[in-house]
Image (tube, rainbow, N blue to C red; front, side, top):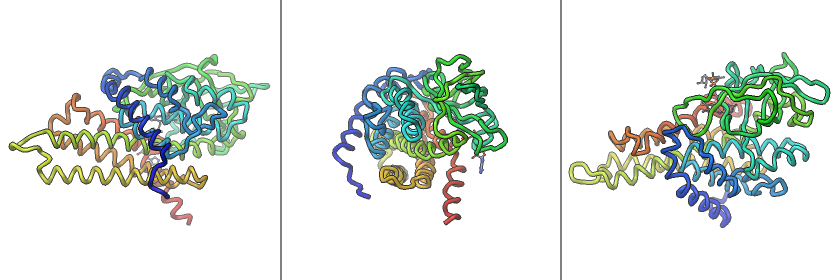
Length: 380
Ligand SMILES: Cc1cc2nc3c(=O)[nH]c(=O)nc-3n(C[C@H](O)[C@H](O)[C@H](O)COP(=O)(O)OP(=O)(O)OC[C@H]3O[C@@H](n4cnc5c(N)ncnc54)[C@H](O)[C@@H]3O)c2cc1C
């Protein structure tokens, strides 16, 4: 792997940083405080091509590689972790499976507006009894003529109340667990679809995590994504890519916490000297920078494997496992380094601390990443 970025990748990173500095950093605290969905930022992300980054231009995407995607995801998440997850879900969990498993008709109807940022997507797998055990899905889809009728409740759906197009996983062959699940494309305009409770989350408060209700929602035959009863595979393959996105989100959060700490260490004085003069503080910064770079390289390796068309599932799990832990540890140290001010809203690091934790939970908890990694080791 060549560690040098191409001119195009550098440009993408620069563009994402510029956008984040101007349109995200100044507003992120307020979105967090008010639990406000960053609508205007998401619209701009779409206009800049950041919502369908890896989609072929034929389907209105930007046609970029996964390395460019992780670079942009890190920068956007450094500016606002909520905007980061909104972007990650649309790119990795919605556009990617649509392009990969969809028919040309589905790409034309559903993918194009999602890749262009004209519509926003959601990934609906989790249910109250089906979290890590996603095969315990109870939502059903029953064939009726040339339509499917979907019934059930999905929870914890990112973008939920603000999304337009949903990939919904439902049981099509009861009793067969993971072998009886299929994926469906559902638009918010369908009768019987409604948004339930919005969760009051610890972090990423600008993003919207909602319950979604499907009450006799009818979709056409062509809304079936991928093969009948092969939806669980669609869900799992999708999450492999999603984990690269979340690893990048974690990197962005960690980088923001680190940069604020570095600046604070040089400006905050105690005992008549900047606290950065103390070796205890210097070592914290050294550890933060080292951990972030290690996690970044693993994330880049996963993205690189994806770009090569090789199996990246284990590397994506490793990248998410490490980057999410690094984000939590770095944000924790950032609060510590800021002393009492770290506990106060105006100094931002408490937000990074709250934002970091989710990266260890969604798109497979850290325990589930370890299951994926160790399973591959044992099967060698
Ligand atoms: C803010 C937020 C946004 C989310 N966005 C989405 C979304 O857009 N779409 C979506 O479908 N879902 C989403 N989720 C759901 C998320 O992916 C799940 O919460 C997560 O997969 C864990 O499931 P659970 O909460 O049911 O925990 P559980 O599965 O009940 O896990 C509880 C604990 O048991 C551990 N555990 C479970 N099984 C095992 C095992 N086999 N081995 C070892 N340990 C195990 C877990 O690691 C965890 O520590 C979101 C969640 C949150 C909080």
